[in-house]
Length: 217
Image 1 (cartoon, rainbow, N blue to C red):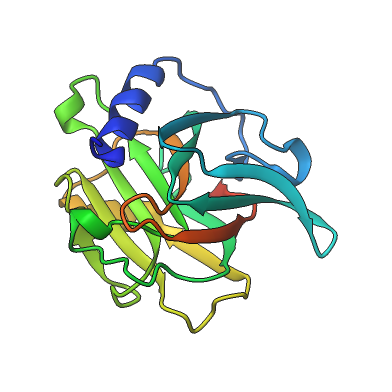
Image 2 (cartoon, rainbow, N blue to C red; image 1 turned 60 degrees about the horizontal axis):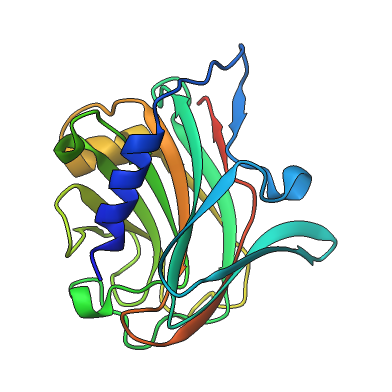
């Protein structure tokens, strides 16, 4: 199987052709599971099918992703200047990490939960992603290039078993993260992608994702 990261970048670069114009607002909703379900999200399968569905958790609708030796993702197209909306927030929960998952190896590049922020370019080799992961072994706060491509920087915003089964809230400055990852200011964000995948290790995992929001500082 070709790298899911590379395929994601190819697909999103091809799709992100139409700019979306946002009114004067403090926040951008990047797919509201609570209000709109899976509206605006497209599915892309690489091996098998991760089951993505809207469920209720404590009375609130969230996205549930169930993967068993599978790899497929959801893509939400957008187009905005991250310097205007640099703060990205979401919450997520996993039932377990990937026991044999190891971010340093292509053969074990699996994660119970991850969110890509995609910065497309018309010249594909210049398309980049910041990939926020619930890491298996990589320490929380670590930056590491994907084993598949130098255009994808993985950032461990949570790691290990300590908070398995708990909702964890995440807030990131994606401009600061992009600068640290690639040494320059980011171009426009072209898409957000979600992926719960276990195809490399053959394991299984369930994750839950809350709404993803971009906002001003």
